Image (cartoon, rainbow, N blue to C red; front, side, top):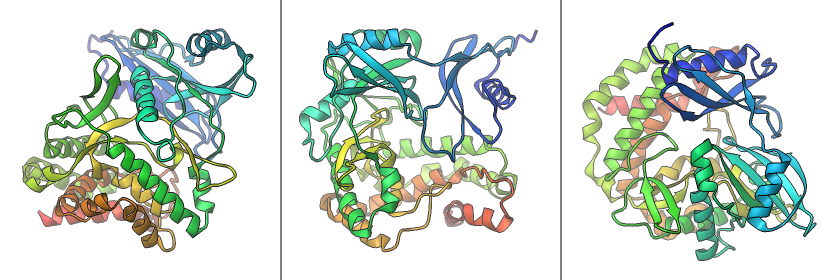
Length: 436
């Protein structure tokens, strides 16, 4: 047996090979979603599932899979579930009510979900989510803080019901349970493409106000860049970035941009199936990173560092089924950060574009009116959005964002369509390299 311990990258490759070989079900026509749950000196633990990415959202069978770093052995997969007995215990502890029924519910990317009803109040339902990435105790604190301190007509958040002792349980098991009130309605990402232009104009203004409400939260000084964490004992504090595994917390915007660009290049090096792109750009990008990251202009330090729900896209906004321009709730507060306000630019930009696999789809008709409606709703931030500091920040952050290509799942795509698929990536990268 080899004495060399398996690396995380090697373990991920082994996990994918295991899943595509049928280890967790029939893989035909499906992709594998996976995430690291935990690591010890001798094991990696993963959450993994087979997903049909073109199918409507539905509950997915997820498995906990451990890989022995010494033997390279994949241990038998264990279903990630919450048994009814555990659901009943958690609901009683958090709400004081008795479980009546439970059904699997649409999952998030990093969680599994159950919709439950209770005997004591048949008109009330809850969502119980099992999370491995989000710090559930911090999520509960932050959501409760937002509900208490921000106008719910601007930034509505589902009520949360903390489970006693959940912080210690998550630290011990790597998985945390969160209970929120079930909010009925339609997910905005499924409704938005069908809205009229006038309806989109109304909705983007409301989304702008919700984002601004987060940006105006008072952060601890000095304003560092990283994950925003909260608890009753300490209030708000900033920790290392876990969303993109950048490290930190960072004391300067330039330091943050350097970490962002370096992490993107590491991802580019690992990306498979883009050999032509790598041959054209990889060495040039490496040279650029080695020689020019100290050239980020000082003006980016003027960018405001703010609180943000970094995943407040249409997929995490619940709209009224009767009035589709009414926001009923903003959910999934797993990724909350203290960061430069303009780092939300890609998410905001998607409000003005059609959905696309490369995350940069064609603009809606009259997209300029949607942009104007968004920024005119928050005029102080519109001025920042037009500033030199923001323009320079976006130049460097977009270089990191577009450096790594989104994978093309259609292997038979003609070469011309491939180039169109990556057109914005190539344009942004070439512009930056040519400028220097």
